[in-house]
Length: 486
Image 1 (tube, one colour):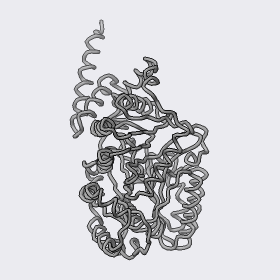
Image 2 (image 1 turned 135 degrees about the vertical axis):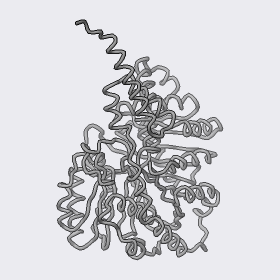
Image 3 (image 1 turned 45 degrees about the vertical axis):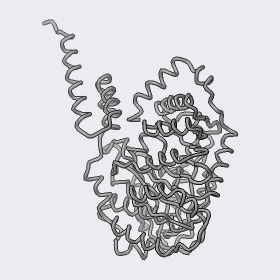
């Protein structure tokens, strides 16, 4: 019997195309993601569906709904009370920045209920050794509670050092709670945290996804980085817990990142986010709403100079709050807008904002790494860097190791420091948190850090991009086609 392989092949192609269409259109997506997934599923019949299992599936609605269900109303009321207690009689330079930026402040209040916190003390930390030295000191001094939430909590030297300290504090009666992402902390299991559990502490993977084998989604990860100690000291930014963030991995070498240490009511925004995430993650071990005000939001008497809003975003909302914040800052800039991000894969709205700013005479500069950690992401970053360079944006490649900072500063007035990259994944697919800071001195310090980084970076000229090989440009263009799903 002769087998008509041609007919069989045609049938497979048709069936694959039908399944591809059904798979992509059965869930709500933007048009860019639809075309990207159709491209992958149609032209890579088997590999494409495997990739979809990791990258394409949506998080079940009942999992997302829990993020809004438990204590948000209670927290909103507590935060309003705390804000009223701060008083508004003092007028500082930061208050003047807020007055000029009132539209941005109002936008975050509307989209994320992000209250404006005044009179904070904020320290910028750009070196892993300095950061963990301060974190360890603050944890050792904790008296009531330690709340930690990270995308990556590795089972390595610094991971074990932090864990041992948490065990010690739990044995002393301090409440210790840890949220980690099972994908970002791959290799770190419940067994690693067992000493903490035995000491009375608590640790759970975000949304209780205990195994990357059973929940093999690369999307919808907890990319936030939060530490809150006694409700009084908070940390957020780009660093995770792992040896590579201390420059101990040969692959990356020097690790350049940006984190901030907050003292004041700005910590309340981090605490509120942690409590919401904890109660969504651990349904049988809820933080008691009756204890929220007294235990986790102590009245602050800090008299600093920095005003800020803590803004979170994620796939539980269609508003893309942090992306909206980035766009707002870019469009507000009249003198300069300087950005650092390890990944540069903006969507059309951010691309347009950057183009408009550059074409309006604003000094737009973007600094990205000159080394890859993910090949497709790196090539897509190069593609967008080339496109933006052609339209007047100054692109810098950082050469002193790997830059992982996620920062933006405009006009010596407003800055953003947090976990969100300038890419699709941070805008739509991951859970993120950023501090938007209204203060001239802080912004000037951020500007100086950028200037210092430029001394170990190369400005990419149009001639440099033009000299790239056709093969390199092809890889960049191909990777760009996949950018909505990277």
